[in-house]
Length: 259
Image 1 (spheres, rainbow, N blue to C red):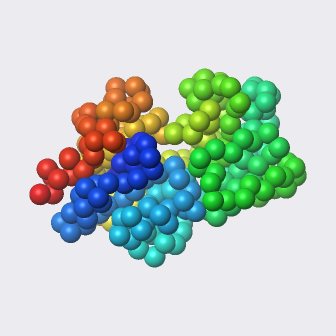
Image 2: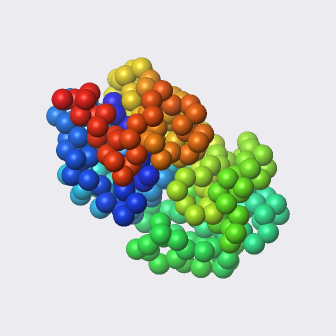
């Protein structure tokens, strides 16, 4: 099984995926191996990826909160934070980090409070601005929190201890943004479940990533690769450091493995 993060790992800074990378992914399936895209993107941002990949493979979306079939472009499983836990987590974040904006992301929609600042990943969707009574009234697969000035790492340093035992908090590629999924929901957990379902041993899974939200997946996989442009925490734990996302590092490895 080949599992790869998308943005910052195989997606270039201009938002494109090279034809070389797409061809390398095709070789994985042609060889009879499973290809899995493992991303923080929600399902609503996966159609363009599915098209670029020739509608092949399975995607783990929203950091493990969704399983998305790229052959059919359908969500096949969803794992949510309960409404009660959303209320608790948001209260703790606001108390600890003044001026933080809150949003709740669903498969095809995004709702937010008045302070939440849209960014690149919020393209293609109308943000529904809601009061807490409506915003936090139903379970949500992913909680987003963006600050006007603090960095991802600064936000995570504050949020991780106060949200421990409540939700799984992390950061990926979003600017001044931290994200959270339900406890037990992560790229690693979803990938492990998928491998078990497919009858694939952990030792036979290779994974590629670049950001802290990839760490559990990279630590779980039999072999872990970090692209050269990865976060220092990723580079510190992977088995191999490879070429960056602008240089088709993942494709280079797959070409050697599936030539």
